[in-house]
Image 1: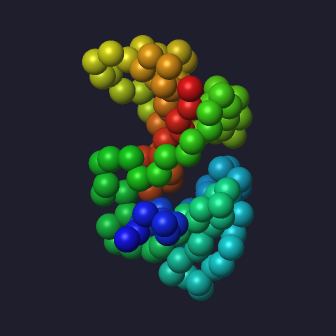
Image 2 (image 1 turned 135 degrees about the vertical axis):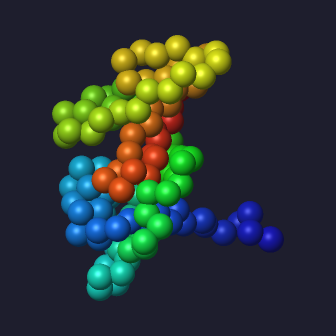
Length: 125
């Protein structure tokens, strides 16, 4: 039923201006639509990310968005680090760390947070 439709990531933020600076300026997403002071829809490849103002911003303790980068993960991590992004480090069984990238066999991931504490991730191989 829903398998043939696109899904949209939705992230709660407290400060829409600060979120726009991060998602557009740091991450490089393109603004598709800005709904006043309540929400902004960004384009990310062929998908969309909506950030919206909420008092519950940053309360999710799990990953909110994953970007699939393939072999480019290390290059993107380095670029974001140069832009001031701080990466999270987690200890989990079966993983090793290569700088800010966590490696599980051939799978790689790196986690970071937006200004509201929402956990975001990059994934590759």
